[in-house]
Length: 145
Image (tube, rainbow, N blue to C red; front, top):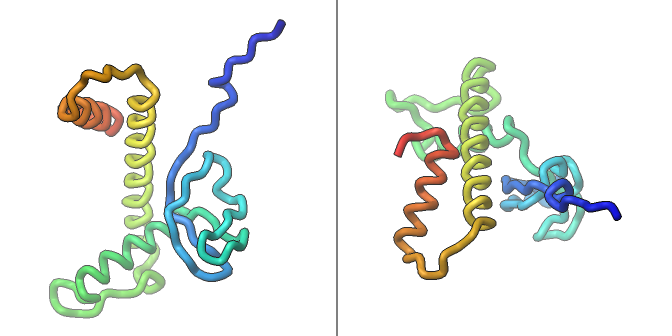
């Protein structure tokens, strides 16, 4: 009789921003790693034209949010450039920020999954559980207590 280790067959799941090419709707998607390029079903129009945003697309969204927060102006009151006019060097910087942010979110999700899958003490107080989550998250992110 062959013994199968179910852990070898479990998918690792992530969350990320997704967008529909058909209708433009954006949402947060939970998906197994490796399925980023698979046509996701759009919750708005039902088409299979949804996809997880790439690091570059996420960086562009971050830049756009930053520029919007500043009212489209820099500290001198001059207009901020669009993403396309930002230049390769500045886009590369924002892509780096996007990569670090995505990596930290992935590590945090992994730490939370580990806590959720681990043994639980039903008598644990809510505060001590939050402390445990915070501690595990800091470890996952490489931060000190």
